[in-house]
Image (cartoon, rainbow, N blue to C red):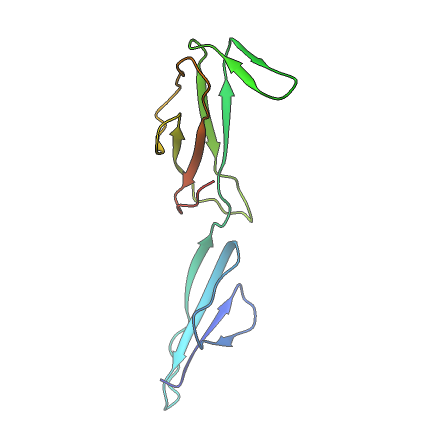
Length: 137
């Protein structure tokens, strides 16, 4: 083979020399190769969607609850807590939300399967969401 060339989003053709990366967004990749006797392959094309933005996760605190002037949130064991997440559209691409993980005082994150409550006492709640491309936040 003499060369392989590629084109990103109808830009200028470039000769492939080593691996390369795409920025976030939708890319139309055109490519073709030529052998040493100048037989040129039919131009081929594929679409690549790059999702580089992690999802956004938020916690909703039910009632009863109180937020102190210092920003501390106080609840009772009856207060319902829930998590929600959104895979944000960025550069016209999003892969979709896979799952939400929760750590409510335990040693590790576990899947969050719905609303939850906490026992009495000081607690730190950790959480993150994971999109289909496995980006965590």
